[in-house]
Length: 423
Image (tube, rainbow, N blue to C red; front, side, top):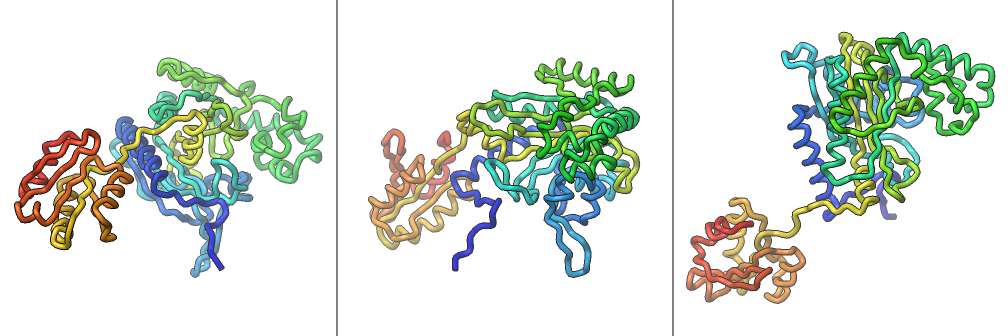
């Protein structure tokens, strides 16, 4: 019986993985410009981190986590998102005591959620995310949004829409919470069981329900915007001012609700407007999470961050027919004639590679014509041919595959010859 890949996962093969390399490199280079530093956390954490950090009323905790008991009887969960582990590390490693504040971090790695697989959505997926901890300045919110937007723009995406909202501070949220309970309670029996359970615990989650999103009470639900106090209004207005100053177009959507419990003040999503992208248009989501560090045992620390899926980003690039500028081909293919020349190319190949060139040779004892065909398939810029006569005369023939020009080069200066080429 054959063993197939688990549902909701994918093999990223040569020819495709190079796109991932480029995106990851762009993300790292951009983070360096913004002074965000990489943090690598474990792929699994104690389950309690996500229950306390993400929220026990969220779909992630209730339905989507891969949770198991290890041999020591501890409940362990494969990380479904990156923010809670980052904040856990921030607290545990006492980064709040670092002299440089705010602490600006990014992560890049696999996450796991038991969801229904569909286009651009997998059960194992890769997230890139950035977090800034230690500042209450709305300018850092604008910076975080700018970082995400600029990654998409640097990769060539144009059909983007940024949507922002304010969830307010604790006082604003409490006032809105009471209004939502009063709004939904008389007819809560018409909603799904999840919404019924969320009414008292976190009624804001009802607005994010996928099953009941068309219910008439959803359309008339109280808007958080109407319950923002003066401080929250001022914060949101300042954010909008900074986004305008950064020439970042945006729309205010008072119905925007992020899917995690820890958000307050700023919430945002970046969406694709590309035709044919699909029903799920969100590329990136994020927001402010003041109090999350305190919830998992640390000091009260403000924070803001985002996460985006690399798979969704690739789907958006396809939807806009954007071809990434990938470096293709190799610098040199070493072809040989005869056993003695074949043996000599082993060391020659190593010398080329150690000098910084991408190079390859034949390992199947193919005829010279077949070796040239292999060089063509590899898109070799040069083919160097070594035979019995060349070896005897301490020479090697080098052919430029784009111009057809051939030169004879001293074997002892072969690597130096390549170092003088503009490759």
